[in-house]
Image (cartoon, rainbow, N blue to C red; front, top):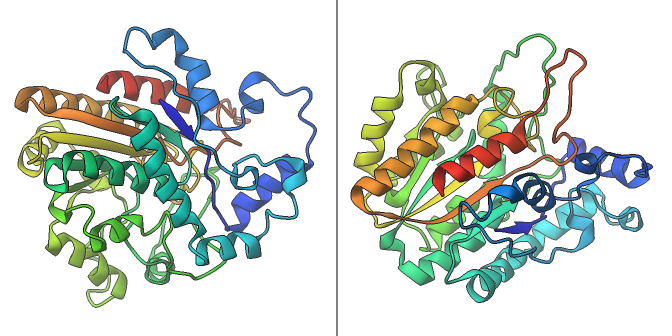
Length: 350
């Protein structure tokens, strides 16, 4: 288990949270509020289970402090929209992901990687390392995510403008609305990068819980819809969010049995798949997601299917933590229980 505290976000909401942290007084914070990254939070909360589940903490992949979710106060001059945009536009994010690939190869293998991080693009580094180890034909990737992270930002913004999301009263709205319009490698398009580079095969990508899957009511000719469904035609598979609104376990089991055709399975959980239902601490929360039991059902079915076909889980990641909201308690008494969910999800797969 290792941490990657990479949070290369240029949207106003994320930057405001970072700036508030850098300007704040942290002396009287409790343990969880003072945690700087997901690795510290998760290892601190589930350390008693490590021996039982054969989990070994392996430390953190080094990230410049200004890219942390909670930067040092001395980083304030770097934590700006312009600097974040420049970092992504210049290929800085992709370079870090390539360095992460080397870190996994040299420091984690031959053990099974369990990554705890924020920016979902870091998954590309681990997957690239695994493909070199097992080949792309032998690696299937199951992604639990509200969003299909293969859409260019310019196209995604078109889809967001068309979307009409209704939230229960009192639920805050945190839309993924980046300041810049770059289509460079980032958390919103890294699966497309991996496919175009020939690192992963579309037919070995399985997406679960996607809430942005184009429905029949969307304008048939929209660029967002066409771009999305073109990836489906190329082989990507989708089990959308709305299928969890009816009895789903049997259907999901059959879906996995049909779609998983490789001996090695990687599972990537973007916490926003459970927005407002199983987590209040995901980085981008633009609509309600699926509940804790849904996520644990999915984990159990994946584990059972791997056991049935003697497939090997070759890696897990939990991404897109919002460190500023982890464990937050609302005025109405609702409390974020993300850490408990993460613990249950990991132990269900190990």
